[in-house]
Length: 449
Image (cartoon, rainbow, N blue to C red; front, side):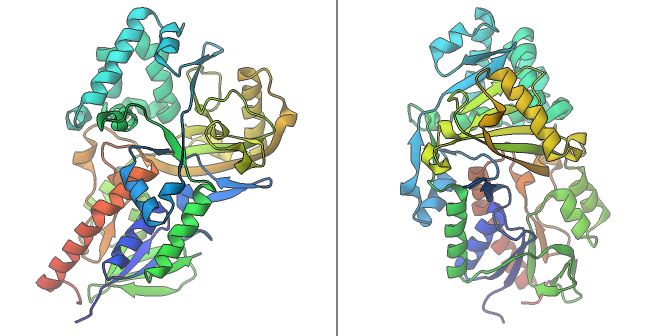
């Protein structure tokens, strides 16, 4: 009998990296495969002019216990810098500060009754212990009931369209609950004020430390390996074939790729399983990272309800992160959430740059094109699963009809939002289940031990 099982983890994002680490720490022999040349997935870094920083925007909250525990293990938790940030709101062609209660009361887009109902909606959602019952209610229906027609039309629907496009009509009220619940988690635990944090050096530093931890735990880290197919051998093992024709066999394969991609990689699963995997609907993103000579407005996040602006929000990272991290410059993210087949994916970087910079000049009269030092565009067709009605009841199981193949991805973050903390939390929860199931299979004699 083998002293440990062999595991091939497909996908070297935060989820795959954390799962590989936890499996190895429990005595398993693990190989981590990533198609890209670098690990990290959505959390990976890139070059902006002379600056190296995150390809997408990330923030750590005081209440992000799972992420902070992992950072503590990497000797980075004490390095986190905590910052109070401000929030902006762009509506009807004007930029407003929404950073405290007084500014909220002065917000001109809503009347006093509308503001009261908006506050009651957020308070009610923050006090709900779970969102199971909200999965049966369309988010728009729930918002109209709690916030009223004007607040829904003026505030909520523009924000929902910005995040989900027309797919907001398919989303349940649990989607909004998850967003509010995360922001209020610290308050529920007794902290008076939520703060935002970051590790100096960004996720490049975190990923370096995590990769080192993987290697020290004995994980074989294999970037540059694009998986082409995963099948089950007659002996009950997982056979992984790569795009270059190379093959490797493991006791178990764990796929952390999006559900539709997993279905394409595993043609040996049942038609019912493949159908469930392919019915998971994803939202994609086109996100610009803009390095500027000077800040825009010093709001960490500016929500946008104006339909004439081509991006979802303005994330001014340098309103939170010390500008010395960016060579004294300012870093801004301009995300646009779109469907995976949206025509925006076909636009060139230059076309996106022109559209986005025109909008920035509209929002910020002091902005000038010559302030731009670097402009990078990231395109990801499948970022997060849309929380449709009765989502948890229709979600494919992590355990497939093949005891050797498991599929675990961000779609299994149920009634949550896609962020690094939730991703780490998913990995921590799933690994004991994977090992328990593997031991059950061994005792039952379903696979080679």
